[in-house]
Length: 208
Ligand SMILES: Cc1cc2nc3c(=O)[nH]c(=O)nc-3n(C[C@H](O)[C@H](O)[C@H](O)COP(=O)(O)O)c2cc1C
Image (cartoon, rainbow, N blue to C red; front, side, top):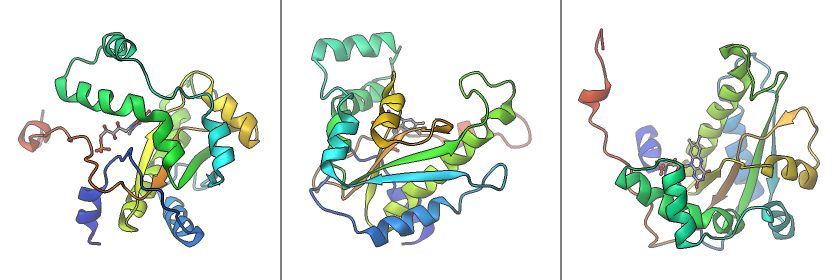
């Protein structure tokens, strides 16, 4: 697939076919992750790849499976989400948080070695490790797209990350930025529309 086609085709998918993914494809995708830029040259990252459905179910046990209409409306108010397209995305995404990861062919947990308190950084450099692993996560999304798969993403809420550490047994000094699901996009299931961006309003040549 041509580079800009991969960029254009990458979408967050939350509905997957019941189809497996081979270890060879996963290895190619994670090799791409390790080719992302890194702040300290170390790429001190690990990726836990979970395909066993029993382990996935245990890992997701803490994530609510669905949401009532009333709670959904309250969430839009609490999170101050007032753009109508943004609301459509949340109305589509929030009820699927558990199912999208459960149905994915593989759940991948990226891990970075975090040397300082990530929630209380002293300066921007303390976030470099976090920024770097997000470069690698984007490489995962693009490589999965090029392989004919798609990804879904969840940021751990509450103590989901601590719970994941207990279930998966990763060391205390490793930090989990997100859950990633990889799978074949379900045929005929539309993705949420991306917001239209007018480049003329967003590129500032020479000066704002
Ligand atoms: C930092 C970050 C956090 C995100 N958190 C979630 C999440 O918790 N759950 C979810 O379903 N999608 C999550 N997403 C996916 C976004 O909803 C999605 O990227 C956005 O709506 C744009 O759609 P697109 O990826 O199809 O272009 C996240 C994306 C990013 C970059």
